[in-house]
Image 1: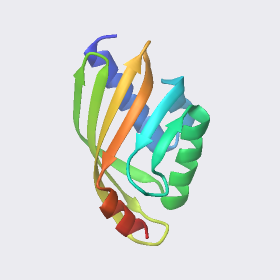
Image 2: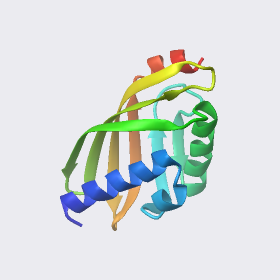
Image 3: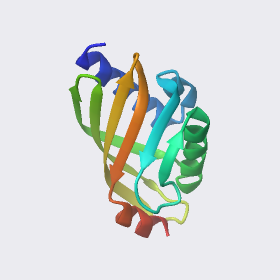
Image 4: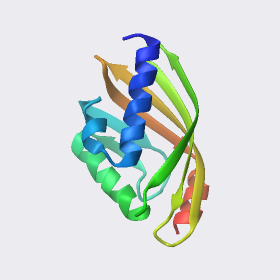
Length: 130
């Protein structure tokens, strides 16, 4: 796939994921996808496989019962790597307003997303979610 196709794949997948359309998002992920979130948040750690990513999305849905909105500010690609910069906003289950900057690194293999690394201000997220 071309860099532009990879960027479109990642953007489309992210938009599906944020909307809660897991079926559409999973169609673009390999069965052995891995998703890494740094830090000590309840959602942190390495998720391996679609079942683990599904469990992660269910956990996120409990933290953000009304979902999140994403404002994508940049999409960059080089070969089979796509970087997505965005701001996620929403209401935390504890009633606090949430807004945080994110950077995602997506690696694509065989036309599917194989690895995701998620970077954010984990301290800010922890404070707002506590």
